[in-house]
Image (cartoon, rainbow, N blue to C red):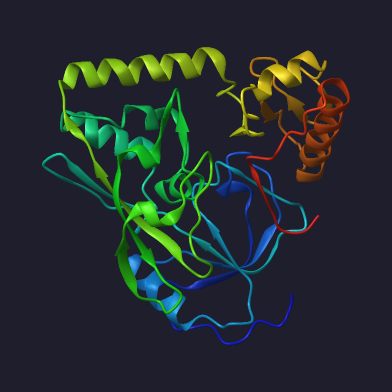
Length: 297
């Protein structure tokens, strides 16, 4: 372990050398040197305000868009989940904290007969990660329905900001350094509950039929290049079904890489880089990672 300075006295306890595989949808990864799961948003803000300045901080939500390397993550991993997952409906507005799953938000909207957020049931993960990546699918993006966002700034204060100031784009946002997303304010429309339910059912059926949801994966591994589909480039380059150890390019969807049971992060990263090289050699297109690589090899 590296030398960790004194950490603030939070309500939630710290854990040390916590294995992270269980916190990622790949079911892969080394340990967190220090693991902190805040009890609520105030606990998170207190930690943020008082954290040591010379310690690396890594934020982890539901782990659906990350690959944690086998060497683990130095410093403090802050896991934003239960306790920071409040979802409230007020008329046609929804307030969703960063730890809330996208599925929970979609269900709350459906139960309230609100339309506009159906697409998010097709995006695995938490709202914090969805904000960071401006998550989207089937022609919709989270920024389309954002009215405001709550953040913790670099002083530890919780403030509400206009999404237009945060540079949302395709699978990206531009949050200032040292800031942290803590909640989304969604502006939706009144809809017919049965129609909302049917739209979500169709999205889930489409996902089930086209994505390898039966195996651990992190969603789309690569971003779609402008005007192109990553899965198509991968398939045309002969990489469908390609395998390293228990890491495999899915036979069902070529931009989903799956853990067949005992894959290591090294297997997965090496497989991805091999696919990138093959696609580049075949098509001249350089694929860009959508999944974030965390920690040390």
